Length: 393
Image 1 (cartoon, one colour):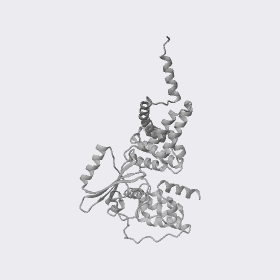
Image 2 (cartoon, one colour; image 1 turned 180 degrees about the horizontal axis):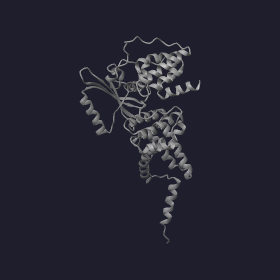
Image 3 (tube, helix red, strand yellow; image 1 turned 120 degrees about the horizontal axis):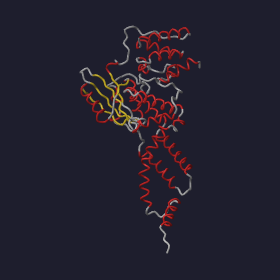
Image 4 (cartoon, one colour; image 1 turned 135 degrees about the vertical axis):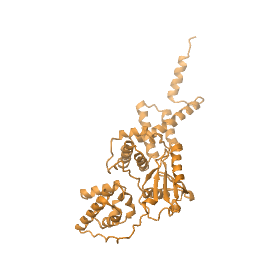
């Protein structure tokens, strides 16, 4: 692979596009439209042109009616270079044939940041001829799938009132996102849902929004911050500690039930009859926390939560925090071993374990008051107390 083609593959990967599928002609043009109609259009068509295959040529021809300005000029240059290299390009579609894509103005996508449990809202809104809107409102979990789905017709006034109430009473801000991206995330969440009924069956209602094939699932990219390049893990892992103090990450925490086994393990280490020095005990606790981090926050799921939340942060003006969240997500993807020692990931688990452990220690202390077996430390402390209380007679 030459340097230019490798750079093109990296660019496409950063945009969430499978270069191999493009080369082989397996990727529908609809999957490219979110980028072809946005700020990344020129980068996209230039990268496709560097792939040098019939599949890439077909994708460029299909995109030509959908792009404009500099992107269209770059696209035509890419097609010219492909023909110069002897790669056949399909005939352009006849003039006047309307694109199959849904009109952008008819459908809106919105999404929220992830909450502490990994849930977020994914909404699609389609304008109706009557003047109202059909709203598909879903609650989706990363990586668990759909937790709830509602379909309702609303006036624009009602729709605005619901958004305002969510923000005012629940602190949930819905920001616009490319509707095809939201649709792809909903299809993915539908497929991940373990038990499906009418309340979690997105495909049952999807036809009311669109008949287009779903795009490959990928988190949206904000125009306000550049996407990290593949292999670029951004700033040092230590910088991720700042996220622990920033909303919404300051509230992120794993499920208490899933955390309980690690709390028990740390409590057992501290109560162990084995005599461990402080350094040994601290290292064993650290090992439990590392294992807890990998179990409670799988790398891919945590990266997706960070990426999705970074988009919302960037779209609401918090670009510095968004960049740091994206950099941490890249670290989780490219160097997960390092990421699981990063302060942000370790801190998420330590914070949860510490809270639960404090309650557990209080409970155990109460139970030990009547216990018959004590640890060596407790025995020595009790013995010392008895010596202090002895009087000479």
